[in-house]
Image (tube, rainbow, N blue to C red; front, side, top):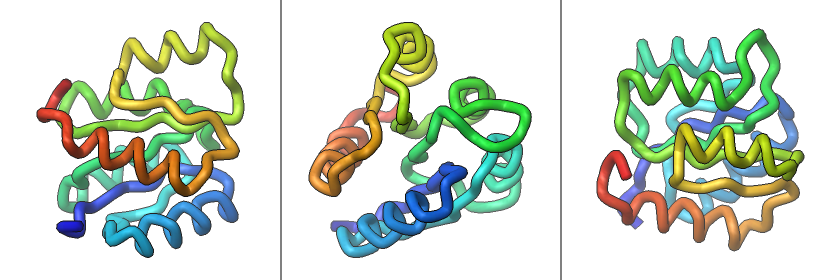
Length: 127
């Protein structure tokens, strides 16, 4: 593991904490943990760019994870993996229009999370 950095965008504190612990154990560095799309965008403006973003679709604040990812895509090229508790087809399709990197339905197993991240980081940038 080369210590790639991950920004975690998740509004449920316990889930964010658990994912952070899992990712750190797997050798990743957490560049930040934020609970809203607005905070994610501010973090990306003021901090070094992460290698990957884990993006919950349902977020606190006025913009959801899909809209936040659209705004990120206008300025940055790195993988975005969506997380959601909802698996309805319309939401999945909307998310895939923004990022084809990955889509995980909660609850996510540690193995599925790490596998999705490894796959995303192995893809060429922007794919």
